[in-house]
Structure formats: C-alpha cells, structure tokens
Length: 319
Image (cartoon, rainbow, N blue to C red; front, top):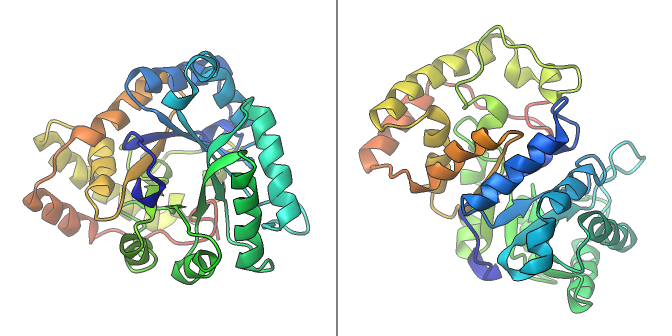
C-alpha cells in the first residue's frame, strides 16, 4: 500500500457501523461478520477512537483476539484519532490529545502496537509540524508502526509532509462522491501515498437495498442527511437501478460493481467496507476479483453522469 509497504488485502473491513452512529445492532452477530471477513482472506481492519469512543475498537479486538495473540503479524490493524466530538474542540490533533488517543486505542484493542494510526480529521488550530512530530515520537516508541491521515486535502498533506512523510490517506470516495479525483488523489499518486477509501457504497446508496420509502432509525445519521432525502435521493436511486442492469450483465450485484469501480481507479489501493452480518461481507470481498473492462468503465461513467454528487461534512452528506 504505497510507501507504507504494508501488505494488505484490497478490501478492508471497516467498523464505523459498530460505534452507534448507524442504529442498533447485535454485537455477537457483528463479531461473526468480522471473523467471516478474516476467513475470506481480509487481513486489514479499520476502526477509530471516535466510533463509540472505544466501543468499536473493543469489539474488533474481541473478534480477532485469538489470531492477534497467536499470529499478530498476520493482521493489519488501523485506527484513527485526533477528534473529540461534543467538546469545545472537536478536532484536536495536538500532541497531548493524540498521545492520549493512542494509549486509549491500545487499551481498547488490547494491543501493544497499532499498525497504522491516522489523524481522523485535519485540525486547523494545530500546526501540521506539531501533529507530525507527535506521531513520529509514537513511532519511535514502538506504539504505532505507520502514520496516515484521513480527510486531508493536498495543501494539508503537503504541510504534514514537510515534517514527516504521510504514508496513507483515507478519504471518502464513491460513484456519487468524486471530488478527490481533482484533489488530493493526484498528489497521492505523485508521492506514492497509500489510499484507502471509505464509503465506497455511498453509505448504502449503492447497495441496491434502498428505495424512495426507506426510513432510518433515529440513531442512524442518515435520518438527518440531505443525501437520503428528497429529489436528489430519488434521482440517485434511479441511477442505481440502471447500474443494477450493468452489474447483472457481469454476473454481479450493484454493490460489487460499485466497490470494484473504486478499486479500478488509478491511485486507489484499498476499499473499506463495513458489515454487521456475516453474509453481507461476502459480496464486498468478491469485488476485488471483479474485472471491469474499458467499456464497462465508460458505461458506468455514462450512467452515473445522470446522478447528483454528494457533498457535505462528516458524516458525509450532513450539512
């Protein structure tokens, strides 16, 4: 994966859905989903301090406990820190908060080191030099192995790079959200930064499971998202229906097609997908083996040009 040198599966199992922002779920079933992903060959797992403030990390650690104890190097565990939702400083990439976050993540995951530690969101109030130096100190201490960032643009990557090379970037990317193609994906290709994209299924938009009458639990952030309401939602669902037809021609589902599309984009190394049930991860893992021809990619471009691009803050689409 780029200059990091990490040897990872092209599908990473993401655990945002296990932190409480997507409504209720059964923990034992989620553990089975994580373990099934591993059985299918996934060796890369991504979580974050902010996903339930340790809940997601602890669940991931529990699911992979036996293998982590038996063969630690067979798994690549990534987490993120540097934000403090609900506080007077929701983005906090200062040395003290980052160090605290790493210690908390190690405790929740029950690990002695984290393979990839990422700054979750850029902090405009903290100099990039301080953030980069703090993370290098943690590398030197053996608490983290590799350093990445998430949701950074080119200017922010370059500022970080001046002190300590950025090894990976985690941005949002899917057929209805393509801004990174202009900034910062070209910078990542030029500087050999590993790119692991999140939400390749548009947070459900590209699964084929939603319809104009779909409603979400009050605890699910999509209940308040403009991307899942009104005329734009309807228009994108119509695009998904057309993509379903193309997917069927390939003997695939629309979700498999959407994930495979991200993996065919120059500079994208990994797609992060989440699941709360074992059966849901199989289709996502299969996307890594779905070949898309030049004609397929052109048809996907033609179809999705009729859709509406999703923008906004995090969670994506929430104004």
